[in-house]
Image 1 (cartoon, rainbow over the protein chains, first blue to last red):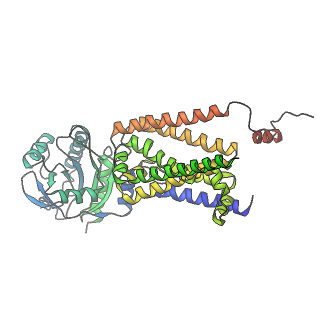
Image 2: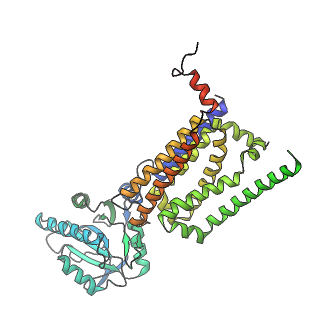
Length: 216
Length: 217
């Protein structure tokens, strides 16, 4: 084989591997969801201070914890965040079930001072405080553990979805489809882990770890 | 060859390259690209293959390339030994754009989409160029692998319990899977049919040198 031939095959192999490596984050992922989970784990992202309106109608920064230190602890809590819209009848109801399980787990194990749950709706037109409140009632969300809120403007909604890597697409029937996951935010406001929705235990463990890491 | 025939041939060549240019420009125009990338099946089965077709048209038929006497053309010809480097790179490019994450990137980021168009035009050109120089074994290897992979990827898309692209709906994913399965099977079957008939000369020669050859003393 000629020197040129060897060079040609080497060049082709190097280019091929670089290209496939680029698309898969170094042969680690095949999907966008896996890529975002990996990216967040390697480099936590600061959650922007967007303004949200909760189901009582009050507006505040998205990670403001109305009940921080309300019980025994004074240290801020880790948060497990999910994104939904209350009219959703498919994936969001699965997420609702997962959150109910998480809430029970937090209660039973007495973790209220360390971890809380936050459900954010991206349907900012429809999910006004009354609708959110109704959803909270249906889900039996306990205010001290589980809060629900909606960004107050389209820009803030976009910023929030972008940071969390959530993509919302129309489902062609008037609703939306979105990549659902459990997003673990540390007490100091960093998105540190993104966990599959069928692994709430993993999310809770990650949240507790981030709380302990932030401890005195 | 008569002067008329030569002229006709040249016109054919120019026409086909012009068609390639028109097709390429059309496919990267924002409304067209956005329309074809709006659905996963259209993205995978129309936009991506057509970009490769445009690349193949743009490079022109083999005689044009073979007759080109430029220093760079000659170097490229030397590098593409037996067509293998070219086919390998083309196969990798096509594989890359079957990866769900790559499809998502192309559908959401302009730079990734431009990169997709550039690499696929290259892939089409490479396939047309290198296929011509490749021997039957290399062709069988690359084409067999690619069609098999497309068909299996199609099956996986059809059966995936979750959405693999954040940009596309689940039923769209099933359609893309069905299309990929059919495309892989059809291209593979068509190529397999072309193999029926006597073995090509080169294969027969290698076969005669191999341990499987019947001894004819």
